[in-house]
Length: 115
Length: 112
Image (cartoon, rainbow over all chains, first blue to last red; front, side):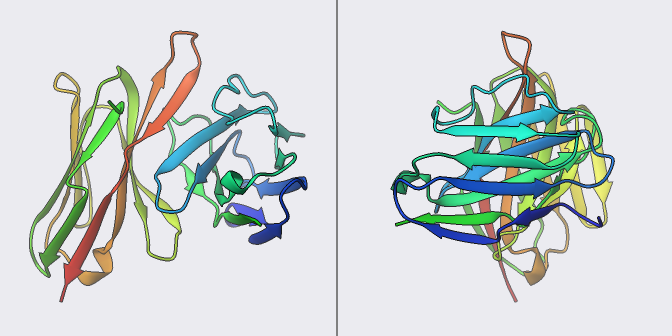
């Protein structure tokens, strides 16, 4: 595609429900990143994929958060048993190879609201 | 203390003024990015640099590795430059993993 796409653009859910957020990176980009931005707060790094593997999952806020990437393309971020503090905009970005060598291209984000 | 500190947090200037936003970091970085987040929320990567200086149009980014400091300059500022500017650094953790950390951003408002 022309850019990074994310779906849904908005998600409202009830506390305790599970949600899945999807990211479609730019075709051919091997590196994919998930970030979170809570209301009025800065960006928070969650997880980074190089191909299908995530070398470091320590940025995930709790064990209710998980992410996977299959086929080196689409990634899903799953939040189980959502809590109100999970409400935020979840952003995905991709780059050709690495944060250290390449520009990141950001998706529009998914705004998650947990009631 | 945050690993990445930006200043100022907020900046209001008149159209045409020269703008400087600063970023200081405490880790040994591999790369530094400047990002722009518009009021609608979209984020655009402006620069990625690991040394020296880069220029794109009215924007200039510099980095001093020894002083662990980077600056973003905007010449002939325009109201459309109004946005939040974010400094982000990448570094290798003690466990050998790539890590990313962000400054809290500088909110720039350019008044016509």
